[in-house]
Amino acid sequence: QVQLVESGGGAVQAGGSLRLSCAPSGYTLRFVSLAWFRQVPGKQREGVAAIDRYDETTYADSLRGRFTISKDNAGNTVYLQMNGLIPEDTGMYYCAMTRAWVRPVGPLNEDDYHYWGQGTQVTVSS
Image 1 (tube, rainbow, N blue to C red):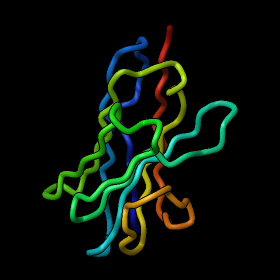
Image 2 (tube, rainbow, N blue to C red):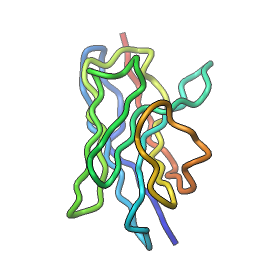
Image 3 (cartoon, one colour):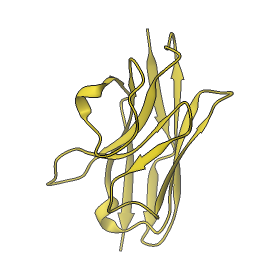
Image 4 (cartoon, helix red, strand yellow):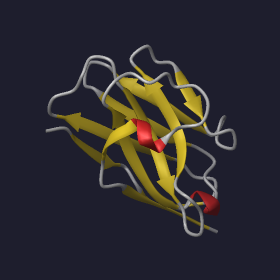
């Protein structure tokens, strides 16, 4: 079975940075895409960023420039570098993976992602 385990969340002050990690395990297909979603209080779950095997990426427009998604191809680990954090970034961040390749362009569609981690909490104060 496929498992996704997130880590790296925590509490920071506004302006700080965090780096989230997602470590997949189990069987995976060759052509998959990975993404970060987040659930913040009072808002719908939204796609943060996605990346594919070619390191093509897409971002939520509001987060582009502050957040960077990357992938360790050797270790099959995906990262989310978050800089300039603001209180509105507070929420639960989830790693997700598709069953097959989905081009990371445009808004993320939750229905494309069949495997989900349990999430890691990010709290930004001030």
